[in-house]
Length: 459
Image (cartoon, rainbow, N blue to C red; front, side, top):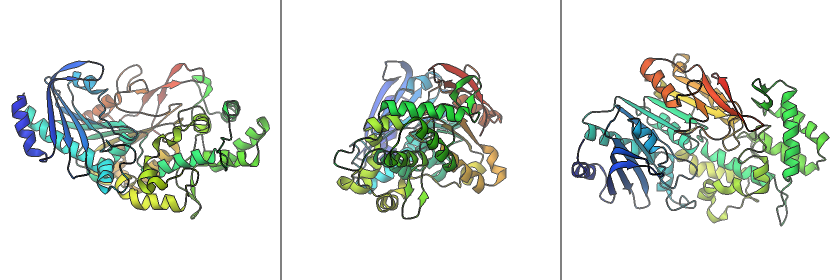
């Protein structure tokens, strides 16, 4: 491998004059695991308002593969929790933040930040990482892969759509690719679950949510939607409008509801609607997910939904108020200002698939952070848009009972083989040996909070 001096001299030629570089012998993650090699951190300032953190990790015993990971939420820091795991297996690994180092308001009136967050940070990291790999190892990587979820899913889909030449295989879980609509859904759920008035008291307490959840279980049980391996656990909830009415009729038998409460429940299970068009623009809660993160209970009793208000802040600034947000005017303004950079929602992924790129997408049926119905809607659009001959390079799995998120390094959620093997192993088998994944194993959490292993097939 090259020395630190060699690498430092080379980096200075491929980054800008205002960027800073840190090099360290060996690779260390945040819990002290060490792998022999070299780690590089670059603070990239491509414009005056740009501040991107990039991490590159090159093990001495490399396996010929360059792997890129994503980030989560606001993506203000540089994630390193999985670095040593991958580099110990021989992967050259890289990731980045998304330029949001200055916090949740940093994108307001800042088009540079919107570019960084939406697509530039990850592409710049990939570009620099590819050049560093070739310089350090003296050859190009044999294969390039991407693996992440949520915000990382947005990042992956942005690369698939904007730079289809970059990866041989991409794994995205719970992709936040309809970014603006997703964050407007957070505001919608927070607003609709509270009374109009001075104090904005929530409509539902814990006991109410427990009753609603109990009804949800019985509702799905009557329709044969339970896990065969765990008969008291919902496998695949459905949130179509006709079912919401039926479900709420059952809830009303078990829990006296005011008209305002009935409307609130209908709104959050249906999902946000633009009153100017009458069209729903994102899916709502899966019936049965009441106690999942960001679900009915946490959204009713805490401010968690507003932990990700940064998209609304970027559009409206200090004028943003979750209780007066207008889902026609303010949503349309948000889309006009942000969608071009932040969304990766075009279903036309032909350019990536037609060159042989493989895309593995996953969603959990109990996810309230990126409701799986929205991912299913996107998958349907892809299948209606992309020519049949290329769809063999795309596969989607809907994981029973899983919530958020299927991100890089998390093998407790789903495995390639019954007890071992990661999603990356599945992707490599597909790209390098032509074996398309036709089954994964979901390690599902039951109502009793125990694990069962469920064979899961493409949806």
